[in-house]
Structure formats: C-alpha cells, structure tokens
Length: 86
Length: 155
Image (cartoon, rainbow over all chains, first blue to last red; front, side):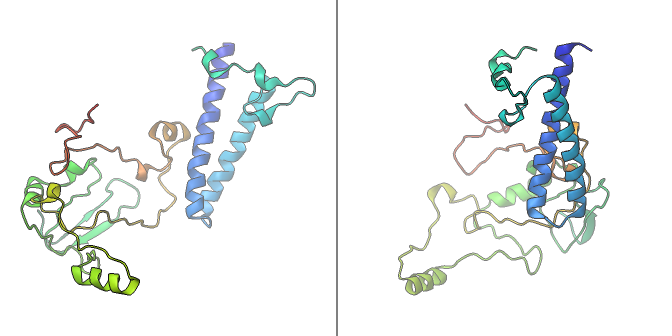
C-alpha cells in the first residue's frame, strides 16, 4: 500500500475511534452504571490505544505525549496542518 | 388530527415506544417525519396562528405551569423584588402562542442500543441511531424574518 494512503487511512481510523470514545464518554457521564456502555468503552479504547501505538511506531507522535524518541523532539517533525496534502 | 389510538414513536427500531393518545394530538412523531414541519399538519399550524389559541390538554399530569400575575405578585412580596407582570411583546401578539413557556425540556432514560458502526457514527455525528435526527430549520411566521420560507438561513 502507498505510504501516504496508509498513513491517511490510519489517521482516519484514529479519528473514528476517538470520536466513538468521546460519544460513549458523554453517555457514561449520564449513565455511569451502564454495563453495555462500559463494555463498548473498553472495546474501543483498546482498539484506539492499539491504533495510536501502531501509528506512532510507524509515523510519529499523534499528540505531544506520544513522543517516543530519547534523543529528538519528534513532535515538530510531524507535518503541520497546513502542510497536509491529499 | 387524530382521535384515540396508539402508535409507534420510533417505528422501525428494535424496541419501538408505543404511545397511547387520548383525544386530539397535534404533533406526529413517526420516525419518518424527520423535520418538525412534517410532524404537524396544516390544521395544527393554522390553529397555532389563531388569536387566543388555547392548547387543549394533551396528557393529564403533564400540564405545563404558566406563572399568572397573582404568582408574580406573591413572588415579589416574598423575595422583595419587583417583577412586572408580563405583557405580550408586540411581535408575539396575534400568533397565538403568548403565555406558553419559552421551552419545555424532557430527558427520557436513554438505553444503550442501536449503535452505529464507528465509521457511520463519525459521519452521522453520533454513535446512537436513536439520536440521529437531522435538524431542518423551518420558516418562522411570528418572529423576525431571519429564516426564509424554504428554511434556509439568511446571510
């Protein structure tokens, strides 16, 4: 698979998982005892962490907290939003 | 306008809610009626426009309480404030909804069900199919003309 395409696909996956986690977060704020909600949260939180981890291993940090290198601040090596190309 | 009957509020979903109505109802919340304009009929709309329109009791026990002038006087004497009895703003005179509360809000228990796939959830803006109602602004006849008759926002 094309490098840029793969990266875009993974970004999209992270955005998607992040979104469903936000929505279930709102639901659980209202219904903290909901077992279905909690199951859903854990299922997608696991997938989210895996997706972020895979992305960061391959491309670089998703958030500043995701910088892995001991010798370089890789956060600024990411393309800035205005540098994105499609 | 309907007489006594029961019908499904969210027909087509896994666990439709069945609503019993007594007498006349004015809003039709069938799932396919996506916009408020589809949920009411022309008779409802024309009656809302009448002067001194009084909404009949829809469901006993759920009557919105509207403060009367006596209440305002009592409130003023109890809390030592001065609140003028309210009169219709000229804009609202004649549109038949004066005296109604500005907004009534309710929040039923939401059951965790009918969940979109994550991809669909992102494009619909919610993971809950039951909360996926597109909002169409409709023309407002009583207030300033910010909305055109076709429901599109000006500007």
